[in-house]
Image (tube, rainbow, N blue to C red; front, top):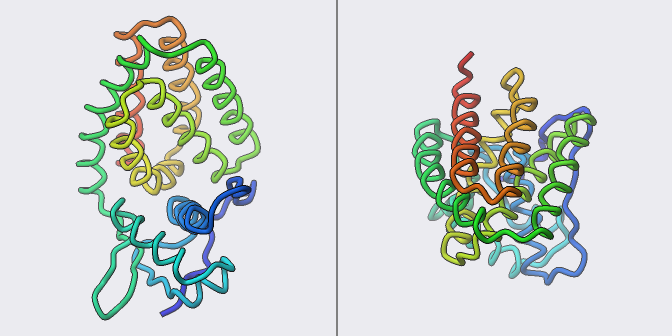
Length: 229
């Protein structure tokens, strides 16, 4: 069993997050999660610990901690007597997850609209601009990272630790499907407008508009994933 070296192709290249200052455990977790969510490691592939140690230049203990943590998030599966496999992608799983996301994202948007600060609005605007730049550069990995940051920032603004944790796991599991949805014609352009609508509603403190905007965003993701016209 070997770790795959395949990469999600993107004319802009594959970007990596900033790993500076992380502990060995967090470094292993962050690097592996980034590679899983960008489909650097493909669904169904087996990950060999020795190969990962050489590739990521990390020890066995932090890698094992990271793999077990990622297993709880549904990104890998620990198969007895076989090893660790990248979790397969299922459209049924995606649709079920979107149903759960829709309920939680609506609640998050309403809470965030009431509790978000001007500094957080400014940060969301900055992330939205970075997403636009990634689109212009056709950098798929950077687009995905910006979208993750955008949703995490909204979750943080909800000030609800339980909801933040629930959405963190859902977003991580959604990102692999998000990579696939980028292939739908025109979807990236739609996302840019959807982000702006969410941002405008939150900046205005309009809970109803924020809920409607986030609902449209999640359902647009669903439609793109199903590749409907």
